[in-house]
View (tube, rainbow, N blue to C red):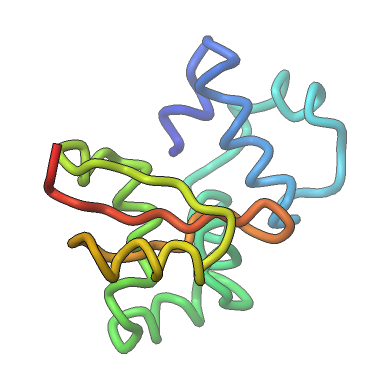
Length: 127
């Protein structure tokens, strides 16, 4: 994520910068301002962003508790990093629809996104 923040291509940097702003780990400012100052962001900002996205108050509490959380908590990040690139990805507007699809197909459901932009993804190894 830190490499993407520092990337010269806005298409790489801006999505991560939006997440940092949404997590409020830096003083509130406009996205364009943060983009121009992106070199000032450090690993600690990224770690705090991840912790907040995972539902923790900060990185310190996340670091202490993450090993005791279900592995599925990290599926969204595995998806972002291409860990499931060989799986068919199906997008659904809600969990009920995704689970219904699973009744006749293989795979599992992953929550992706945050309210109000939350999607449910099923992964299947059928291509």
